[in-house]
Image 1 (cartoon, rainbow, N blue to C red):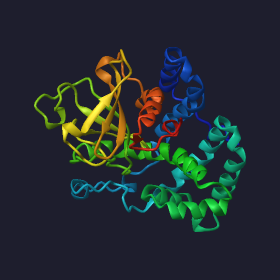
Image 2: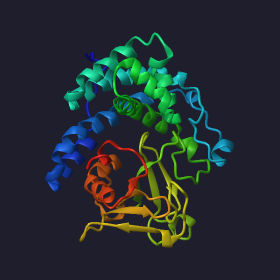
Image 3: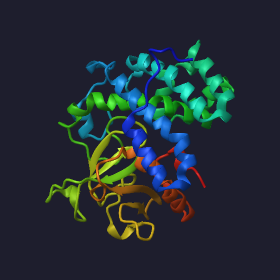
Image 4: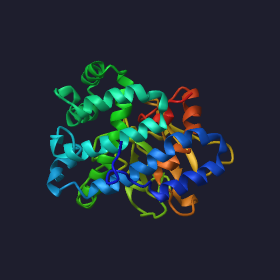
Length: 312
């Protein structure tokens, strides 16, 4: 149970965007009900945690970044253990409320994380395994907790998302002074869950091939945004225009799915130039779940795992 000091109020900007999307796409209301509140609380928690992360907690090394190495690659995450523990206390009850069918599994994870006793239940160690993609270590930890590995990964991603979003905020200014040209996140190394064409262009830049605004990628885990060359696949770096295509719903001008025929992966894309204001990108991604279903029916796979792009 959360204490008064631990409770957080959902981000009103996210709530407003979810409500607008619910009115525009009633068919997505069940999905929006399940995930909308979590996204709003995540945004609020990330803002609160950002003030608890010291400048020394994450090293920003321009030389490593120039070589394509994300900030958290191989990093000791023990300096973030306290904020991770706070996220556990705040976010696990929210997950239980949103997904009551997982209450038993969530209680097992909660007990294990509250009484680590061994390395497999240390939240910082588990976070390291998740960022490293160490499926074997995560499977062992899940077995100890008596939960399916997929549930543990789902919970860890939910807990870590606001923590890593706070890290992203804390390093944003320093990252702006460095060079990053990769398709994976410069903060946590995850692949993008969404691409966006920005409202403001910078004509003449290599990032603008294809005409119009700059292309940014939005990290599927920490929510960091970074620029990328428009014609490049963020996964395999294929830039051959004959091996890249897109599709959109007839009559739709804002949303589309960018597909790389070389690796068979896709990233949904939103054109912010066609929108009034700039809603939170994660809400826009959630509102494109129908495109995820269509893309998977066409035989393509998402570049990054998101809870709502696994639906059939």
